[in-house]
Image (cartoon, rainbow, N blue to C red; front, side, top):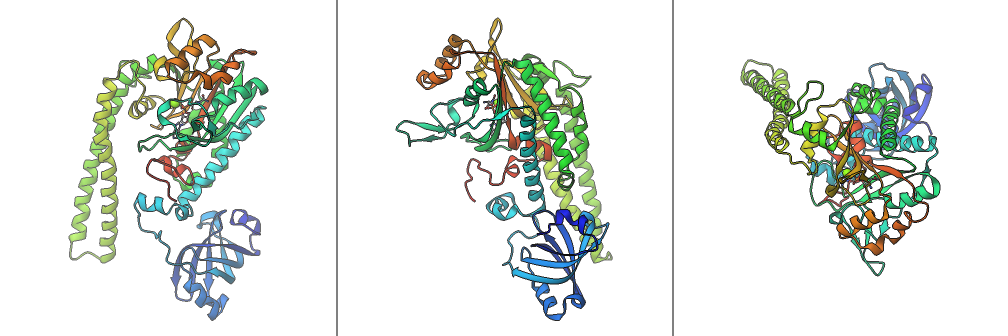
Length: 505
Ligand code: 4AD
Ligand code: MG
């Protein structure tokens, strides 16, 4: 089999490609097909002269997503995607597809989500899944290169670990068992056996809310390291994010270009990631402290003014273009061009208006942020606007973090947790911590959280038999992909998203 991805190796040769019709245009005696074979897209030129009357007639009947093989000569064509095209001398049709539901015109998100099994074929979704594949590969490579052992944690667990409000409960084992919210506690057992481990698996949270950042089933990567303190943990997180992103940018140039991702923003990863305490972060959020002369509240106000000015300009442009459309002496083509522009402008105004509606609320909630609270989505957004790099927020208030986090020395009000917030408003992608090793403190937290001590006997054993300082973190795979690909919603980052209110297809 030969694939489009390797097309440059076959210049001027006659080869056979097998795939599907991604696009079709027709002229007199000629059909232009965009063939996709999973590895890429290529234009194929089918002429009556080359194929003969009968085969050409078949070619004309090809509908979108029909499957076929094309045999022909590979010709350099600078202007085409991939730089080559195929001059077909033969085609074999597998199937003429029925009317394909995803046509070129714009579809609503709900429609596309119902057709997710087909939507995955379109260029943008294809590109995202290929980036996802490389992200997974380079995450494994990062840890394997550093002698971490891939360690599988169970999916059914007898205990909660990340709060009891987001548990999926099952009743197979004679007592309640839950789908894992995290593999961490088992990874801790793994680290005491192997030193350095990482889990890579699906995790589940019954989040009864629809946001652009939450899935009910997502993949998490959780390294766990014996003898690491929080500083070493943060060093590893920084190395990990920098290395994996750089590797992926290198491996996925075509895909990221197709997605329109401005990859130059990642140059900033060369610099050290800022590390600030939760208490400092609160001051930034409230606008009481500045970073490099930038004030979070002021930035929001400037954003707001900027968006409002953009809306005004676009509205003025619409008025001008409407005059062209309404001019009876204007050519049809020019009118259509302007109509399309007007539709585009209206959609852009709608997007901007959403922002101008939200920002005043964000400013209000940022100004009134109370010390001790967890950050909301908008607080994270505001904070990430101050820093070019991912920002690491550490030392969190004890009550809002998980029971296993180690107390800060001499201050039981704070724990050694760290959240990593991705820039450009993407927000939390990593949560990690140094783990509590003091058994009494641990028991106290387990009781305080209303957790059943008996479920944690095995976990507590880890503190009885050769207890050592240890740390780890969890990366949300789909959040990471959203940031790398610049996706507005997490549903596009996983093949078949599981969200509150969606289990089909
Ligand atoms: O911050 P979280 O809850 O941390 C843990 O689960 C720890 N046990 C990790 C550890 O220290 N080993 O989750 C870690 C990451 C988040 O930063 C986020 O990226 C992702 O998992 N995440 C979600 N992604 C998509 N949908 C959700 N509902 C998510 N909840 C968390
Ligand atoms: Mg978290």
